[in-house]
Amino acid sequence: MHGRLALGLVAVGAAAAVPLVAGQHILTALIVALHASYIALAWNVAAGYAGQFSLGHSLFYGIGAYASTMLYLKLGLTPWAGMFAGAAIAGAVGVLLALGVYRYNVRGIFFALVTLGAAEVAKGLADNWDWVKGPVGILLTMKAAPAEFFFLRREPYYYVALAMVVAMIVISLVLERSRLGQHFLAVREDEAAAEASGVDTYRAKTIAIGLSAALTAFAGSFYAQFYLYVSPETVFTFEPQLTMMLGTMVGGAGTALGPVLGSVLFSGLGEALRNLPFENTRQVVIGSKLVYAILLIVILIYLPGGLITLGRRKP
Amino acid sequence: MSALLAVRGVSKRFGGLQALNNVTFGVGHREIVGIIGPNGAGKTTLFNVITGVYAPDEGHVELRGLKVTGWAPHRICRLGAARTFQIGKPFAALSVLQTVRIGALNRIESMAGATARALEVLELVGLADKREHLGKNLTVIERKRLELARALATGPALLLLDEVAAGLRPNEIQDMIALVRRIAAGGVSVLIIEHVLEAVMRLSARIVVLNYGEVIAEGSPQSLVNDPRVIEAYLGEAYTLA
Image (cartoon, rainbow over all chains, first blue to last red; front, side, top):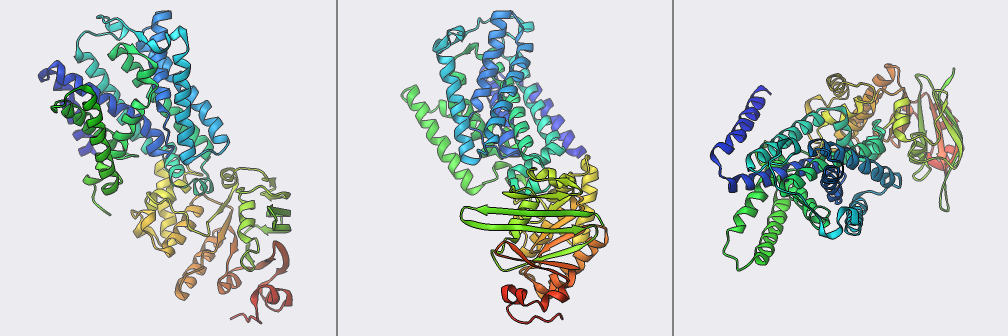
């Protein structure tokens, strides 16, 4: 245990030292990888631990992005606080959605479809809501205002992203060792047996979605501050959802480090593919999606528990 | 003697099938009661009604003096009735220890306390040396023991066992009988569905016979083996107690 803690601290220390040697381009790639790791871990809380395979997490991601941005633009609230407001709103939406969906015993593939639909509805609403600038989206101005979560250089964003991932790993580890986390696992494995063991499955599933939603929203706010642009087409689409799923499934669902491993791999791959001699952007996009798909299929067939299982001894 | 479990006039219908029809019986404190009957007699449905998986169409179930009709299964488990599943439902990707610990968390808040309790129960059912094995890698017999351990770890006043001896070899049946006796000796009442007559006859002080969803006889094992209705419906031929 102490050995692992030491190893973890060394890893965090090494990651913290990266900006001393890395240029802005590498840092950007690493921020993208950390951001992907974070949202994968946040989705993993519901999908990996509790087995609630949501396809609508872009909904919560988008709520985070829009909430902190609108609160900043309309009320002047610093996004440092706005991101917590976004998390609270996303958590509440997640809980309400879960209460309704689970009340009617929607599960498995149907649950996945309902959540996917919820994200689509959110996109439709944002597209048609003038107050949030509809499909045009909202541009934030680049400036140096650390108190308002705006930086000109990459380093501060890198440290924020790193801190978020470290916090998310700690949350996952604490969850794994808690009564609530054990209830999540029981729900994932078999709901009837979980109920027969005294687990309130309705409550556990609702908490799983609410918690996962709130955690996901923080990443949406980070996205807005980093890219300085929020639109339905960037936050409420399937893209963030895909990032969460690829990283988690490939790295290892229901573990605290698997989603990081998978996300870093995919982000690195995306970076590498960009340097291939394609004719245009469209070919890059199609080409990399093809590679993602093949890699995903191969890993799911040969390593159904994800890459993380490679390092585990078979009992 | 105040009843621990009282089933009063319970009926349950699935479409055109009357699975249970006006079933009434009870289980007292520290009592072992058996339920026998041919396949399709409604035994498992009865368990499902008692443990809150199904709400009865008519009648009600009382546990520790409280009407629990309509309660969710986890609340009934909290109140003190835990069941095993006929077709074992191991948590496939979880270890034996994790599975039983989830049961133990029903009464114990802390993980350390629940782990200690789970290890005690695993010792009792003889699965202690398999504690790191995953549910999906267990044999049928080990799954039955795991089911029993998971249910027992929830700290029940009433344990409902659904065919825990089925499919076991003769010496394993003896072990299972001894195990259920040990559990009962610890102050837990047991309601047991069983096709292995030797097990149910030797364990139960009283047996309820179900046929087509109705209670057709109730009494001591000795009295039932000579009851012509029971012989016709279930035993098939004169059954003698070994």
